[in-house]
Image (cartoon, rainbow, N blue to C red; front, side, top):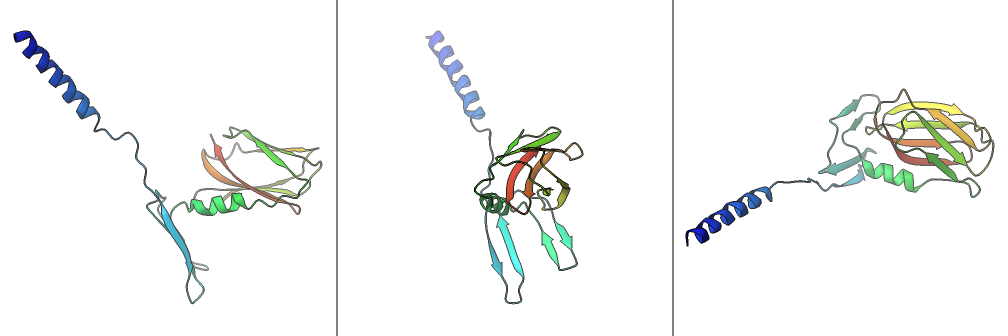
Length: 166
């Protein structure tokens, strides 16, 4: 009888530890939603709710306030790549450590302009170059670690993608 009570007590203690552990939150995700609208005086307002964000930017020129990542704009740009039918673009590696390489289905593309934008939309890198054969590489060693929107353009195409810099 005592063995059964002792076994029961051990079982209750064991289960109570497991129940306490099950209450730990392992993942946390906040859903984001928002909209873009234009006021009668021409101002465009884009807002999101529930999005983890950087706090504020401010500009006084044409009056511009940014807060948050506005990731939907990145997705829109990436989905609207304007490539000529004969121009296929591949890039590697991603994540980038030092250099990013681009391979094209056509040779000797000229006036390629690479721009990187941080999560606040600031242009943090801008460099032009010409492809050697069907390849070009850009040195991104001076760029801090993070996530960037990449824009590679010339007079034939516009290519957008997201990269991670280690």
